[in-house]
Amino acid sequence: MPKPTPAAPADVAVSESFDVLLREVLDETSPQTTPDPDCTLTFDLGKVLTAAEHALNSTRHALGPGDTRAYPALWWISGDGTYLMSNGIRRTPNTRDPHGHWPHIVYADGWGPDTQPSTLLGDDHHETLDLTHSTDGPPLITLLRTAHTDGATRCLLHLTHTATAPQLTLTTE
Image 1 (tube, rainbow, N blue to C red):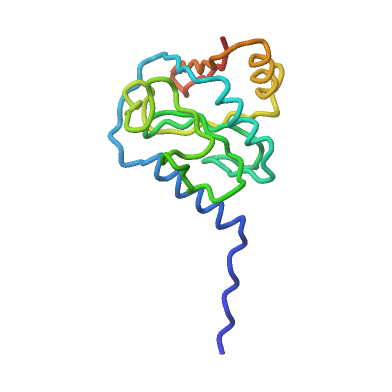
Image 2: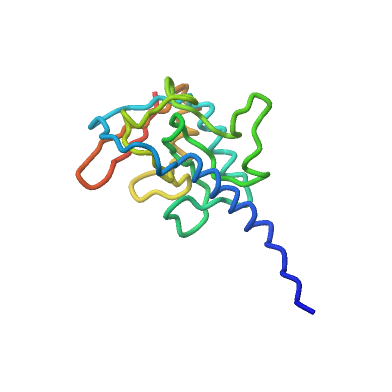
């Protein structure tokens, strides 16, 4: 009698669900475009902070493409619109809210669902923004919390394209 195959652990199922979501967002069959050299995306700081706190308060974190360890982060994703998203895992990641939106996602102003930022930002991609570790100053979560407390309302993601890779800078106002 053959041995039964053990069920995949819950973490594997959740990880696979995030993989499906990222493959959906980062569709590699999209037409290739040349991005503008520089741009600034504007996000609602309160919503960004909510997504960041979600990531920090989650007990598990999904790995993005190229990530080798799981830690609290915001993902910046360009695909169907462009947005910042918590990588925290608390429930099935493919569950949408009653309005059909993904949980803990903050779209850039003017770049919501059904927009194609590839003409502005280049091909669909993903960047991981570490919330708790920084090599050159306070961690991102500290900057977001301080800016919010000081009355800032906008989070600005500045993107500069270089010969090797896009360079990201985050500021608030």
